[in-house]
Amino acid sequence: MKIVGIIPARYASVRFPAKPLAPLAGKAMVLHVVEAGRAARSLDRVAVATDDERIADAVRQAGAEVVLTSRDCASGTDRLAEAARSLAADAYVNIQGDEPMMTGENIDRAVETLLRFPEREIATLSVAMPSRQAADPNVVKVVAAEDGRALYFSRSPIPFFRNGEPAHRKHLGIYAYRAATLARLAGLAPSPLEKAESLEQLRWLEAGYAIWVGEAASDSVGVDTPEDLARVEEWMRKAETMRKEAAS
Image 1 (cartoon, rainbow, N blue to C red):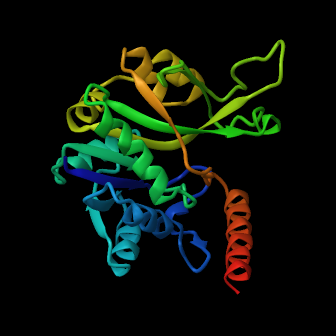
Image 2: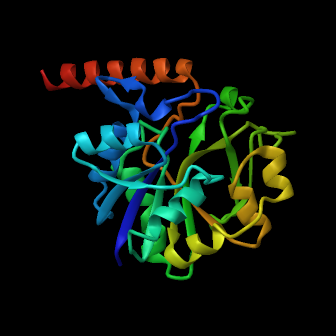
């Protein structure tokens, strides 16, 4: 099976313009995501899909592949589907361009679901999260059935724990899709639940698709604001210090 990782990177973010090019630990944020894609053993190819030449130039200068897409793409999935038309593969992985802490191991875990279960069309990941973070609407929560099939995604803390100790699951922004499935998803119209929560994956659930949720190897943090970027940089600095101390 040929599998291609695509990193959608849009310049005109409302909350954080030019976000993919924001400097993080000495390089543009999107290049950290490129490195994660290159570290994944399951991917045959990695490309950045962007609508902006400034992002494209930065990626090319780093020796990575770029696919230029339309500025009219309404979602990351639409951008991915457009890029996929020039990157032939059996399956694609949507690696969010604003997830600089994503790892190659997490990418491999998402792909593993498609490799092990030929009948499954869409795979993603989740990780246990501290319940104190569950109230943050920027952190997406997921509830899944015992077999791993997603039941619902929400910005609200789900489930509501009337009794017992809270145990929420954080959804990580990564998706693996079979090629035919990606093409069909891109043709779906926005759905009521998607509009309510501003979560595109709810469109797929409402259309009857199953999304299979695997266990992430490690957490990842999405960057939505400059403040998020500063926090990620601090975490990276601490991690690098710990690595150096362990090696000495």
